[in-house]
Image 1: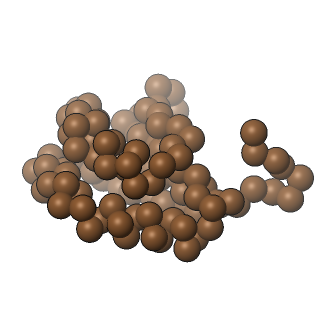
Image 2: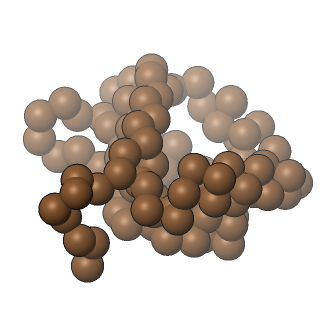
Image 3: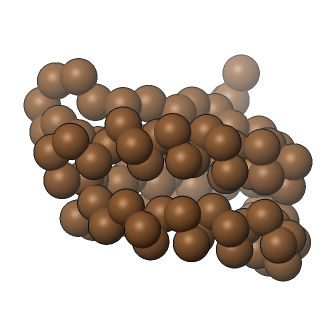
Length: 106
């Protein structure tokens, strides 16, 4: 198993509009294609204006297949167009991680 940890940092005042567009256009598609969201968070302390979401996959091949299928859906292009209009993302990081040998996912 691997996890994909995505972090987006926004200009002040731009995170809420992005979340609204994400909820309407991307969230349904990601649930359909990606499946297992382990968490979707916004920061309330520390570095603000951040969104972090975590997805579980069986393997990197599983991740690539699922994300590839999602990107072929015409609705994903609509989401990308909506996000481009917002112009509020300062940075995006994407970390792929696997569990430490002693950890067993619950």
